[in-house]
Image (cartoon, one colour):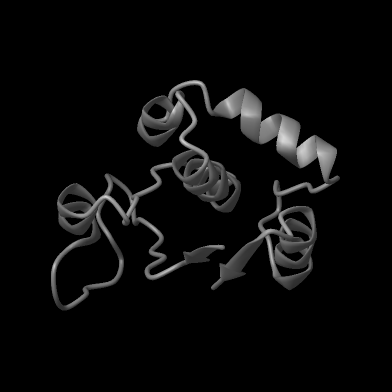
Length: 111
């Protein structure tokens, strides 16, 4: 069973600077050091991006590295969102998470 855990969510404040200061090792360093941690640099639909990347990793998808780097992932995300009828243009909440969990029953999404 795949468990996707969201450890850190930060909104940037212009020019890529984070609004929040955090203690410990930055996420970008942890993502570089540990294969189990992936930093998703998507400006929109980041939860969908993270799910696709995590599933590609578990399924040993040959496009995993492309997805992780942000290549070839946009059409896959759009197809997923159309398939499960989710519109993330105004953000997401619990109802959207429930729909993702219903679609990916064989995985456990923890936020």
